[in-house]
Image 1: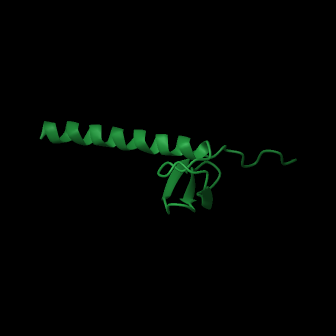
Image 2 (image 1 turned 90 degrees about the horizontal axis):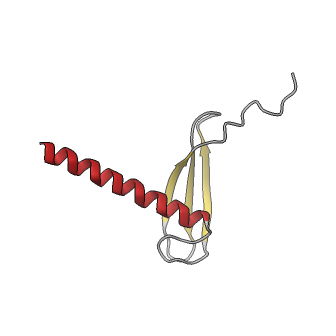
Length: 82
């Protein structure tokens, strides 16, 4: 049972590392799959002022699609006069 638990933790850590590397490639403007500059933001959803944003990216060359939860800047309520 302990081996399964430890294995699951390592698989999850590897998954998070892969997602981070994919998001880093997208931030540089490249598709993580085909390495072309054809990645576009296709959907942006927010769960409120303090929640994360769900960003969905799609590659127009190879069809790669992935969504990422990105922390929102927490900018609700700023810039308003009282």
